[in-house]
Length: 287
Image (cartoon, rainbow, N blue to C red; front, top):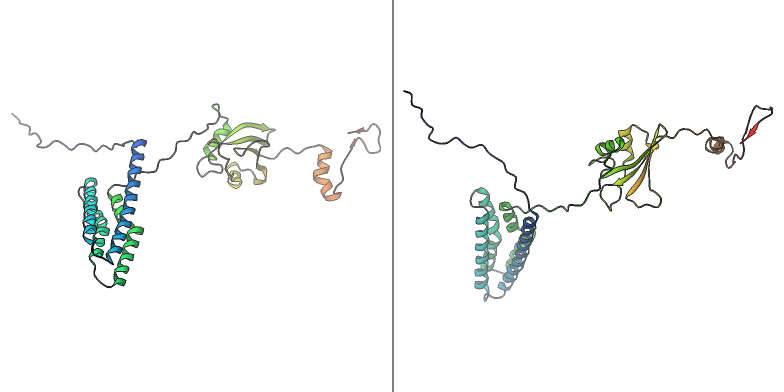
């Protein structure tokens, strides 16, 4: 008969990481409490400076000031113990938190020439007001809550997304892209080489950001001079017109004359009529 020996202790349980959701009401209450603590710290610093300044001229309030300093210091250290009950971090935080109160007590008991007391008071006020060691110690054991980001509605693009709009969303409108926070609408092809569209800001009520033409040219492999982003007449800065590509060359003689010939050969000349036909022949047609 074989006896199996049972383990004396149960096997260790696997570690489970649980993410606790941040409730907005709790976060706001925590931030308000942190603001109140900061204000109380400022007030106590001013009160301690006033007590030390009065102590330079009279000792009548020294005892009361020492009792108030000891009470505030004891209460603050007790709250640190509530937040952090053990560990080296609590010891460091306790030393930082006790620094202003202990140094103020020494300043109140200091007996010497006025210039020495004034120098000590100036050093204490500067160090406590600027460095704020007590606040830093409290944040060591209880970090402040993160700032809440307002949840603003994001305008979405069309449901039946155009392939060009989908490419724009993946490559151009992403963070760090040539036109972050935008989407394309009213996309149309003009011929085989030109595309026109409307750039809209994804956040309602905001302007379309400056489009990085150089980066967009690199993404599309289209020369920069063939990419144009312009305002739309009669519309606000929340929309912009986009044109990518070179239009087909026109065959209109008047346009060719105005664009190519007149600027170099006859500036200011306007072609008013064109006769189509054989030179010296008959049956020509005016246009």
